Image (cartoon, rainbow, N blue to C red; front, side, top):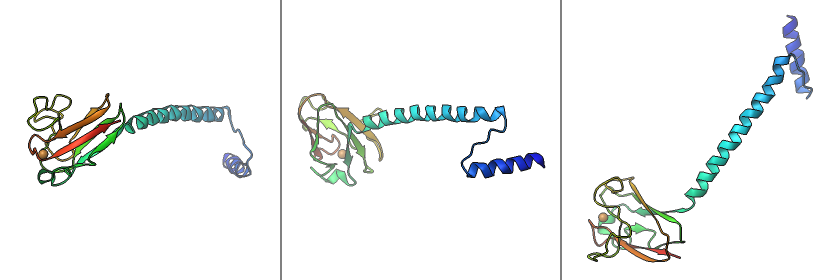
Length: 157
Ligand SMILES: [Cu+2]
């Protein structure tokens, strides 16, 4: 009953903004809380660093029904970026597509970048992504191997 009364009194004083230290053990509580805040701050900084990286990525969608579209199959098109940025293509269609550098039938097609017809970067189904980082200025035409009418351009400034 006495302990309960002390707790009640402490609560009442706490409301008034008066700190009451009931025992030595209570002194450790604020120290632990401070340590947790420090950890959280470090964690948030790490998250911010990741967020900065994300802004260096520019999204391009392979739109639904892309197979029968031409220069509207990739959106936006053209996509304009700056040197060092990464274009991330996402297949938002249900069909299999590619993102292949160059022009249809050119000997150097696919040499700069190519999501390909097999392997982990292949845009075989909806939701799959392929990315390429551009380190030199210029205009980069690209197309879909499976639907050669699908064409796009990346402009790197
Ligand atoms: Cu295609």
